[in-house]
Length: 359
Image (cartoon, rainbow, N blue to C red):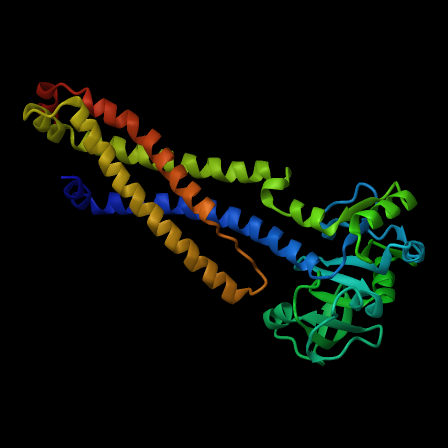
């Protein structure tokens, strides 16, 4: 009977399934994109090879919002500490057209933080108008060694293409970055590598620069999850609530219309011995089937969209976790259930005689 009722109204059933699928896609894609971007950024910072990050006071953990306000000479004082092995001053710039991050670096010192850049092609920059690009942005923008590219209203020549995972997508000479930013002898932050004892070295830096923000890399990476960022919680909750409202309204409208259309049918069923509970169970069962079909379709379309977006933009990371898949299913069921309860209870309360006389 449940499947028969669904097949009897294919268009409305199809639209209900699509609406519930949209809710699932909305939740999974929004959460997946925010979580993926944050997680991927944390891995890129981790790949630089530093143990400690030294930033100006009250600076954001999102480096794109950093300003070059720290004196570059502080790097020498940091390097003089007994626990410090290497210091890399960095100017952080953001390309306004596509919000891609650009690092202005001292190549030798930045490269020394880890095993160094892994070049896919080309060489390090040598002139002030040369840039190193990582392989993801090179694939996305079809860049090759020798390509001309405009960044920050400045024309650069690509000197090399390196493996991704070193913080930024582009790397330019630190002096060029300071000139573009109008920040002579100033930097946005320092990457610091300790000689082994990270916490002891961090303590030394705190004594030297108590007013600055000093984070160990492990502490920074632990912060880079959507659940640990209070700024993102209202956004995530809003998107989830919107999904529930969409599911509720669609199911409420669908069930209300269906009950009105099936008033005589419900009267016949009650005349044949259906109890109120049987009517409610039948209508909620139909809602459950439509919801499960919608969530299954939504999950499938989400993974399809993830694959397509990854192909179009290799730098875009969408993290779809099993936890959020389960949450999206629960949210869809919850929204559909609260939308179906009132029409189902209303149908169960019909008097059989009145329902049979309904035109």
